Amino acid sequence: MIRVLPELLSPETVLQAQQLLAGLAESDWADGRDSAGSQARQVKTNLQLPHEHPAAVQIRSWVLAGLDQSAGFFSAALPLKVFTPRVNRYTPEFPHYGLHIDNAIRLRADGERVRTDLSCTVFLNDPDAYDGGELVAQDHETSHRVKLPAGHAVLYPGNTLHEVTPVTRGQRLACFFWVESMVRSDEQRRLLFDLDMNLLQLREQLGETAETTALTGLYHNLLRQWART
Ligand code: NI
Image (cartoon, rainbow, N blue to C red; front, side, top):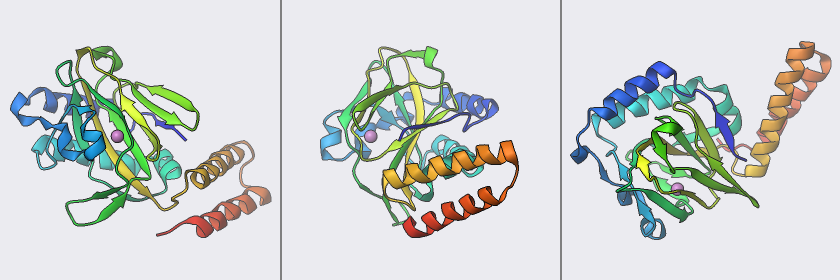
């Protein structure tokens, strides 16, 4: 399932992030192949900030704070661990990331392994600032093309083929990371998300009823069956 998380970052935070990135020198950016697996590095041509770069540290903390505030992120991802968010950049000189599947396991700097059940991209500049640069992700038989306003994020299953199409004008700035979910199965996660969202609607329409209480219990009993913590 592919989900959009609107305004994960506020417009003010997006502006601060853009100003930070605009002040960087070309030499601050590193080759994106540093973090790719052996198949992926053959099709990857982009730039990334090193994890320890001050701008990367600052933007990462804004993104992690945004995730903490986002009920939609929690409901859709049921996160157990988040891999260190990274800032990347595509330009006509470093234009794209061809079709690949991300490595299943990532080793975080603190020694923790993170299974990449979900991928997330947070767009840091607006779609009209660049041509191309669409994230194309396969969801079963359907191919989704995603290019969102700055501050919006997209969450998609880690087990899918995906690519970023070549940027032919301007630059595409984004932050991306992986999530290990408490619920490994994309299908089970989708069922829980649908139940949760419908319950939310029911409660808005009817208030708390015996049925919403029972269905909320059902949600938690399914989560108890399926979650690993
Ligand atoms: Ni990828």
